[in-house]
Length: 220
Image (cartoon, rainbow, N blue to C red; front, top):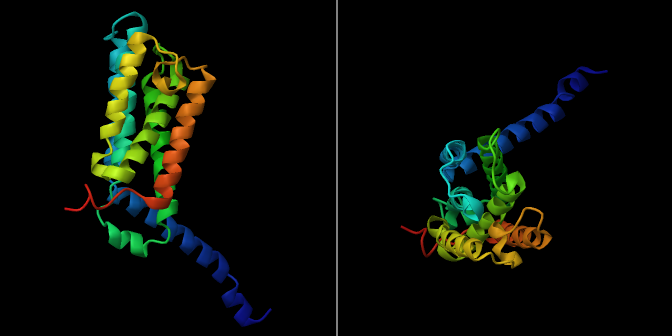
């Protein structure tokens, strides 16, 4: 073994570690630019509110017991949808070749955090529909928010999710059985799961490729 070989051998691991560190920093900066830490805090507050509502029984009995949890779940989806706003607009699109990967990763991470924190909030208390229905509602309404961001921009991505929430509340009262009213359906409803997952997949795919609109609502 020569002196040159001893010097150059560690170069590959060092380069890999450097790329990993750079990638981690890039992902963190992407999340910070989209107010990711604030979003996590808001999601944690939502989990706390949900726990308080369930612990102190601040809900109407019967089927209407789902109404307040649905509002909190939709609120979590809205928080995720508004993080699609980019403060850099077209400049970021032109220079960020890793942008689609970062968009995808940020949404998946925040959706998982939202479900986890809300699930933590209901630990030890009874939730109508259970955690599976909670997860389905967050996933589906987040998909609606992502699709909305393509048209309105990230700052107005809350419009359609909240509109759908009103529709779902009415469907719950009227006991509709359509799968596209998935928040009002039982957690074992396969059609409701398919609809929610499909909306999320389409929204995530479109947002990953295109990103939120930067002309209507995002340009100041």
